[in-house]
Image (cartoon, rainbow, N blue to C red; front, side):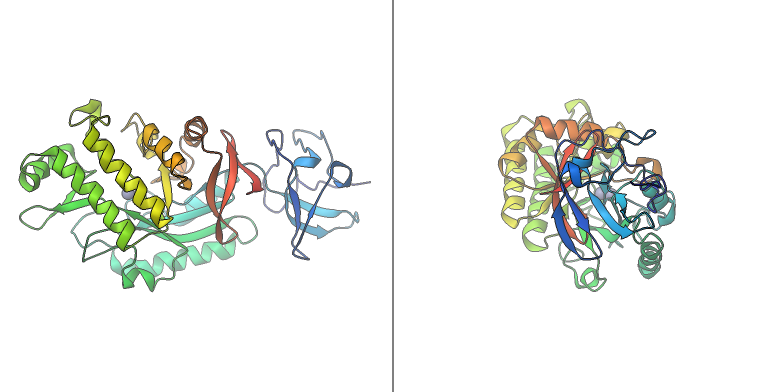
Length: 368
Ligand SMILES: [Zn+2]
Ligand SMILES: [Zn+2]
């Protein structure tokens, strides 16, 4: 009979708690590369031992190796999360990439991605310096080697769309060989002196831009923001469309517009349709919630409901600027998404974006 501790001493360091898993799934034998279904009777897992609960018919094994017990040695992928939107000290994040990887590993994430702000065509403090990009990628590559077999790490960038200057399909971005790219609009046009107008910066600066660039017309300013997102989606499609309605950060208490106004709804719906048509992933971004900047996720609940009708695939991200934020408010987001009809979230896992079922506790290991 099985001896040893196939989970307790596993090389990933993860505790496997399968108590929340809902559906049976399969076993993957990495040695042969073959998949086979396990039934309850086939599974050699110990049950009910210490705090580790393993329901054999729910197990999903990512590593199967022989050990001295003659039973395969198992490494389980427990319910957990993934996050691909994060900022390190290469841009405006608080720590180096290693601190985020360590925290992702500690929390048992399946995969983690870095997405520092790509160098910007404006003089701002939060972008990466062009000369840092190579070091950024080299540090991620070193971490990938260190965490191989334990945690999947991916190299990405959050790339702004500034027509004619920068975008996800810019040759300078393409040559970096990134695993993915988050396309975001943080600037909608420029002040008369050429300074980029930030849609998510200080409120007073936002109001100045509305005045100086859009003649005091909030509707024109907000429409321009969505128009730029559509242009990005159509002309320079990223892997993931970042924080779709982030401009609402300026709309505290509905001080500038109402999301129920028909012009606003039309802008958002047209943008969702463009995303659906382009077949892009849409990000659900929790940063507004855990930073208490917005009462709703990016994007808002009604937008998510429309995205669900359009069958737009979602990926859940935290936009972390600190390791403690890497899964911030994910449970809340998952509950909202389930209420709005979503059954799957997409994650970059084993080098491809794939759908996973989810609960408020995490992604379910049975892909598809
Ligand atoms: Zn952003
Ligand atoms: Zn970001």
